[in-house]
Length: 386
Image (tube, rainbow, N blue to C red; front, side):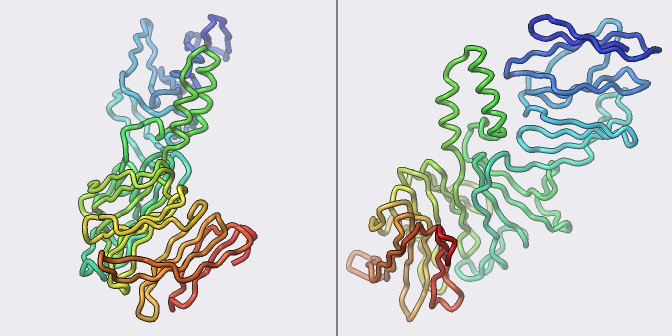
């Protein structure tokens, strides 16, 4: 058998293997970003040739005397790796959207008989936040109504998706046939470019620049700002709040998975979201951002604005609510090395948080939490101390 590879400049390279098969196979390789051949595999004793390529799934080439090859108009992720198990006749493929597929190719005389043995869909970019769904649906504000299967958790990523996972093998509710651990994928916008591996995008942009195309720099800049930065589930388990790197706040109903609120809350990325706990007697959501502002919203009144706080002079990294000594406290910290303590008070116009303490440290403060007795707040610092 001889394989003749023709590149985009028509320079042919031949690779020969011993007889008895003397048929010639011709494969064309181009280096434009839309298509690039990455691997070939010829199945012994059959007239089948596998090839893995960019911008498509794993096509099967069946070669005859008069070869007629047709390409699908559908757009798929690039194939970045492929391997064949000759014993079981399984074909495993990895794509640049970080999905994995294993195909059973034992009998492909009828292409419709190719079967999927396993597949998994993963985030294709940096995962920024994880949120575990509260046990029993939260109990507190929602009467314990369960909106998601037990053991569920959510993740968000720079790929502009929010994904609902459940690793309980016995759970069959809303099982995703493409990924058994994945229950649901929420696509926050229509930009499909973020679903691909950013390294692949960078390489493709570089190749396009060498080919003389323009406009890739602006597109790459927009993609670098895309993504969901933080998540928080309401204590009653009914709503999911998410903040992205453009400052947009979204609220999803976890029963229907529909978006019920979309608002440009900040001028920069939202770094922290926090719901007030049931023991505070309030239904509040605090949003903190790189724009140095904290917005306090009333979750019980369609997330209407209660108050905006602007004491911080740099990015705010954490906000927490706590009920202590019969009062509701709000604590925040940030890159300005400050910790602000505030107390909620009922005034004529409604609820208002007023500053009671201000502590300044010597280094940037990255995260904070309140311990179970609600007497102490632990802060993680840049100098590796707590």
